[in-house]
Length: 180
Image (cartoon, rainbow, N blue to C red; front, side):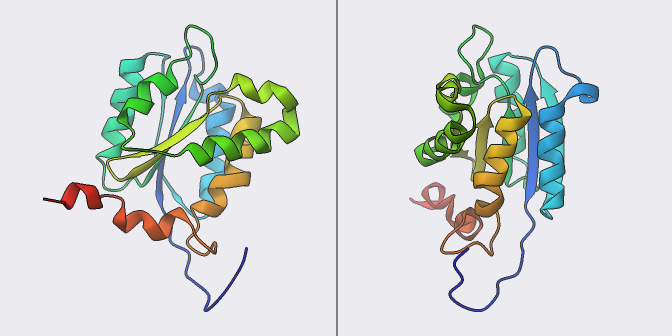
């Protein structure tokens, strides 16, 4: 972390986690548990957590509701990013994106490649912004959730991270909505 000035305060964000699975429950949701633990350990607030089946409408409805909640700044989903017929999370959420975050996918795959090699191409991890809320779509494995949080999200969701981070631009995410 580069530091060029006075120390900055930590700003806790409100984060929601959605596990996408036809079979998982809270009792065996290791990926959701991994994200929830890392979110709270970092000092953020876990505002909501849910499990939705691999169904585009149900996934989209849950995330849209969260993007309308003023207490939620970030939505992280886990699961449904592969190529099988039931993997529909990117299809459910990418149409919501007002801004797509291609760099998130690129950096995620670079980190993932170092751990699992070419198997990383079997994930369609993505990210974007909808309703002034950051949305990150992660694969369903605990390892992928660790890679995304530890390698990208922990730093970018921390106002103290320099030279730049997502927190400092949050007040400007809705500028396009205010234009005449």
